[in-house]
Length: 328
Image (cartoon, rainbow, N blue to C red):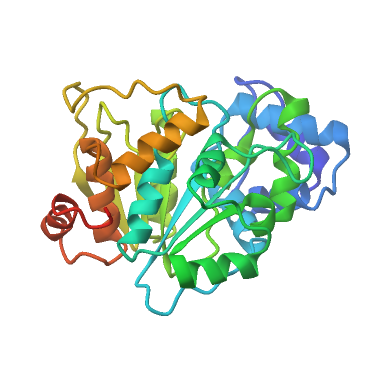
């Protein structure tokens, strides 16, 4: 399929556009990643997809193209599963608690790889707010995959810029500044997996319809993942309203926690999300036991323990959280 043909199919507007087959979508996204398109075609394709909305077959084809061009890493030999956590949101309306989740998992013995980026900045792209909090807490982003592998072996935690895992996707994300909005690349980035068959991906979306499509995609691929509604577009449970958390094990879904949409989980977090030092201090207090972990985040932590194989059952995982596993 040529790029011109793809544009003719998907660029006719919401009423007249046609969907791509899975194979067509994979071929098209490979062309986008290799930049075998002109700047005009690239912009037109990204906007057409944004207007049309991606079907499950299209997402499956895009994800296959992305996976084939993603760098592979070897999980630490002692690990049952590596928790793979994406972070791609540029703005937070409440303190970003991804570092609290990742560091506590790592302290408990779960290897964690956090990947992310925003694009649009110099030297490989701007970093998301969570990366800045990680750095404030002593976990700066790595500069190579070799360094990431070493940190996973020694400290169970590596914070990895997306361009190290998939340089072509990193380049595509850098268009955000010119594009003025997110595109399909930002969605697919959340599906990156450098440890296929050895990981549990934490997959989120703020859009309920998109979350349903991602659920279908994970089920079709027989993958292992934890799916839930995103908070500020990020992969941590809302500290005031727990989302539904679904565990996909070889594609089979099991709801570990139902949605709890009502407040009452404790005092809302008052720290300014733009104040990196304040957010880091909040998380450090949680990690050191001076402040309680919000109950929804504790639920997500327990879900990660059981999904990575570091707890035998959810009851076991809850007990680990209750006794402070991962808290110093």
